Length: 77
Length: 111
Image (cartoon, rainbow over all chains, first blue to last red):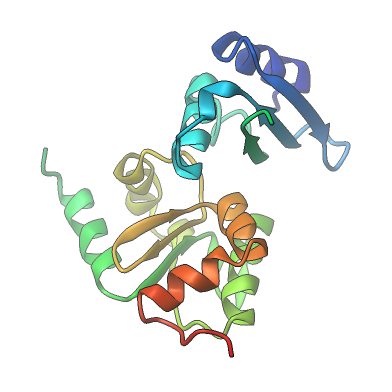
């Protein structure tokens, strides 16, 4: 079962209120998404930790309902 | 917390300098993300051991808690979890992947 892009955005914003979130439906099939998340919460964290924080925000959906999310994280400049 | 699958995964990770948990085998990846990492490693001529999680359901589930990482592929270098497809690609593009592999003595620095 697929997960819609707006739901991904909502969960991420809920966990990172300051975040800038850009969601792209990569294949137009509602199943393969790309997300770019920019948040101050990532400051001082390794890439692995940053991605783990986003996966946590998605509350276990990643790897389940959400099959493919190409993730890019960044700290605001 | 010892469980047999975690022990087995530990052994697999230790069995080779570069281990890639993936969907499918290196010659025929079954997922675009796995294929992308295979392509990067092959492009760098890095020898690696591919572990097909599709043929091993216990490892497929176990690896996720092992690394606290929900998705496949997962790349391990000298026992250390380096990342999934996105991170490996970002590191490759930034030249960091080559640096890490050189540091760990797996490939000689590009001349």
